[in-house]
Image 1 (cartoon, chains in turn brown, purple):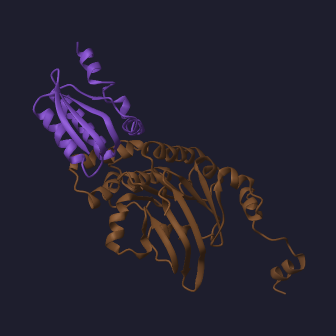
Image 2 (tube, chains in turn purple, orange):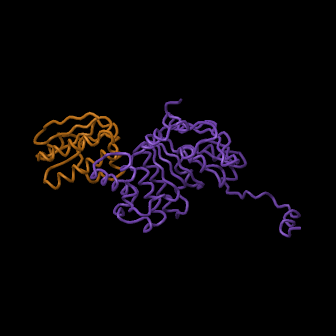
Image 3 (cartoon, helix red, strand yellow):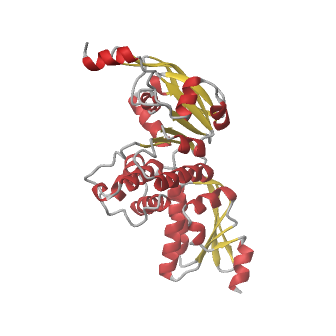
Length: 263
Length: 110
């Protein structure tokens, strides 16, 4: 294994029922790298993320995190490894019955025996970092979409993980809030040295934060390269993604008319 | 993490070194708070710190707050680059008294 490589996916094959979602995916992420996984709906990017997190067992292939193959791990071992992993889910996945502060400190309560005072200060520190200082007593229902994302990020980083996974940070946010989250991701890497995997379909965000971009299409990796390599790619489907070209094929007038009229 | 406590010009100087993380920050916290509970002005030397996580930073915050409550002087000295970048992320570089060295702090006290 490459010593600097903290995430290594080899020949990952995944199915949902009989349907194959991932077709032999390979991915390597170096220590301290921000790798952005891109692709349209149905590309398999969410499925890949679930496998990276050990939430799904693959049909075949391996997923090595920090040198350990999580596809062969017992639940208990995976639980220990998760101390080094932070995840900010797309919808926030905050518990509605708990306050923001209680949500953020959940991993510390679960994984550590730190003093209450230390936990409280760490929680407030992380809320300050995501610009939610003073909001710890609110409940998730009292937060805006952008605030929920930031609270979820605070929870994801409360243990200072080595690996941070962020699912669709920009989805549903206005451009300013989205840009702020991008800045925050860059700052976390710079100051904490975190290795960060971001799943997104937002090009602008990907180009701003990524060291490497991995483009998935129908469960295959189309390209894994630097921002410049992705921009210069002549692969038609990547160009389509960059130009936001519709996936619709050209209209066959006769066929279209038949479909409309049922004739 | 390794640490030691020395005495310099009316201060207890807590020297932290190596990685200050979840595994050892409770010990760092206890050392800092013990110095303050002994009513000593306290400096924390971070010059040999290669990494400090937020549990370590939280211990420094608690130490500073305790010092303020007790009317004792508190400061960070020789903050290493990795430690400084973590403090900056949380904007704590604007909160803690930070000095290049113990000598600099002693010089300021006159």
